[in-house]
Length: 125
Image (cartoon, rainbow, N blue to C red; front, side):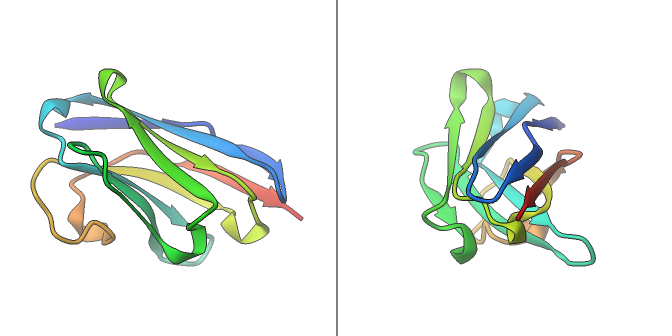
């Protein structure tokens, strides 16, 4: 089992920045990849960014490319999401996710076995 705890959400004005953190505990030694998803009110949970634990290769959804950066700290078993140039449409609950086995498609909700409780990000105009 893997436990994920997000932090760093909050209220920010458009154009501002936030950094989300996701601390993993438990069976973290076998982590294959971690990701951030987001869910706006009344909408489906959608992919934002992913990172492979070995090698650190990253992938981003088009709406966040160039503004968000996902990174990891292996020693701390923590993944981060640096969010810059935030827009009101970035308002959502942000969820951290992890998978311990090889998966081809890292942008799909069903790929991940473990989820955090989510952290609210609100961007005011």
